[in-house]
Picture 1 (cartoon, helix red, strand yellow):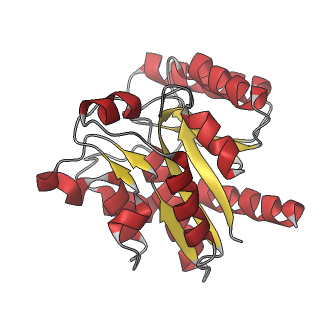
Picture 2: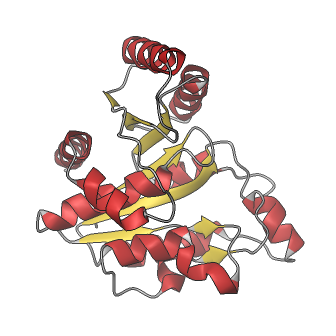
Length: 245
């Protein structure tokens, strides 16, 4: 079986795909066998599928897997997965996700799985994202914002995962926006300082702001893959692998 991790976030648009892609590329450049998976994605239209998270994840590591293996479920409405499935008169079956995960996990040494939205986002009427993490038996990496609002969202996410007894490898703080003003710099500095004291998990970042996203996705991923934060995250992942043996 592979040794994987689940990249989740404090919210949507915090940089999960960026972190997942950068970590996957970092591991691949170290000569490791790496697979990627985005079990569920919404807001996917046929005309813009090339810009979808799943396709970008596959392309960044030059995956030979079909997009249907990387992403078992895709929906066009840009809403929560439960609502998207209902609008398209479908039901998300977690057993299908588990089967695809097991298949990929036998092909790769490491599997990076990216979630959708935050941990409480509903997948079915009774199952949320954190239940999927639990069922896949993967440790989580939480991606959050480094600025204002980041403390509350990060601590709530960590608390929710701990209640499910899900191991948390790290909290990765991302800069979705540039930090230019004096107040923005104060907000970021205090957010990071408080989270390093209160999160109870390794806090990485803040990651450098990548302008022009998502249009400059590949250059941003290549740049981030070389960063000290990705090196540290890869090290934490390897330690988790050794503990699980």
